[in-house]
Structure formats: structure tokens, C-alpha cells
Length: 232
Image 1 (spheres, helix red, strand yellow):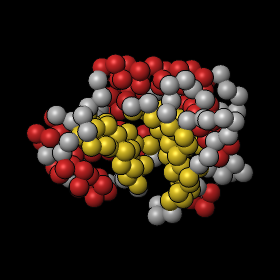
Image 2 (tube, one colour):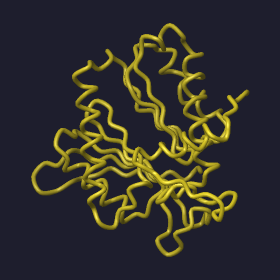
Image 3 (cartoon, one colour):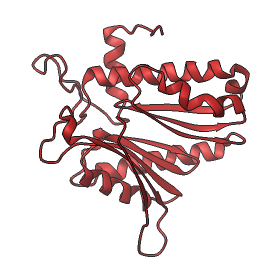
Image 4 (spheres, helix red, strand yellow):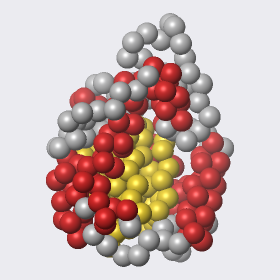
């Protein structure tokens, strides 16, 4: 499958904006394969791969039903090969073959299909989602013990998806902050965990992926349904 070639300058720009926060590029001494954004645990190569996965996924989904795609509201977000597809569509062809098609994309480890069948959300809801994302990012910046640039926040129809290469402690803290944010109906964690004892995402023995859904807070407690993904 052909990939769209990116110039070095464009690649750096794309990588620097993936985390959704202001990022500082590190040049020279870091060397090839080193993390290139302050606080970002993915390597520059992985960040560029994730950007390519998002682009290719859109093209592949469009190929399933071009007319249906154009009338849909579909977003793609990839972090370390975990691909989130979110939004709304009425295309049965897309719904039927989305996961199988996306899993064939080079670099994709796991597909989380959050696409729902129905009408596209309106401008009002889209604006609300953008505001929730902005509020949450701001709150995370103020939280101690959270490496903010390691998180990507996606909000779709009041559901917050948290993605990133994180420690279990900061991942859980971020989820609790998200669940307590006004307007959030549900929190879904799509993390790749690093071992707190190593801090090394390349140590595959210390890395796992967890998908967890938290409902919006009711009363004094949160319940959760956790699915451990072991096929990476």
C-alpha cells in the first residue's frame, strides 16, 4: 500500500502538534530514534508512523463506501499503533468492514471502533466537545505527577477518549480528572502502559495495553469494566 511521502520539515511540524499541547522539539544530541518532543514518550519515528496511520485509515475507510463516507462524521486517531475510529455514520458497509480493513494497515496494533450508527452530531455538540477537550487539557496541565504531553484527548459526543504511553498511576489519575470534568458522560482509556520501574517503552515486558470504560461520576464512587488486550 502506498504511503504519502512527507518532507522532513512537514514531518517535524506534524509530530510537534500530535499531543495537542505546545511542544518543544529537541535537535542534535537526541540522535535518531530518540523522543523528539519534551514529555512525549513516543519516538519521532513512531509519531510520524501514527500520523501516517491516521491518514491511511481515512482513505481506507472512504474506499469502503465513498458516498457513505462523505455523509459521515468519522475521525481517526492513532497513538503508538493503537487506532481509535470515532464519530457517526449510516453506512452499513463501513460499519461491517471497518475493523478488518484498518487492521491491515501497516503499523496498526489494535483498532478501537467507537463509530456509532446514526445522524452526525450538530455544530452545538461539536462545539461542546471541543470545549470539553480544552478544559480537560488545561486541568491535566495543572495536575502534579502527570506527563501532559504523553496524553492525547479526543472528545466525541461528550465521551472522552484518553490515549497515550503512560504509567498506570498517571493514566488512572488522568481518567479520574476527566470523569470529574463538567459535561463528560463517559471516559474511555486507550493506553499503552510503561513499567514505572523502567520508564522504557521499548521494554516489551514492561508494556501492556488496557481498554477501560469509566462512567461519569455518580455519588462518591466510580465503577469500571476493564478489558486487558494481550494480542500486541
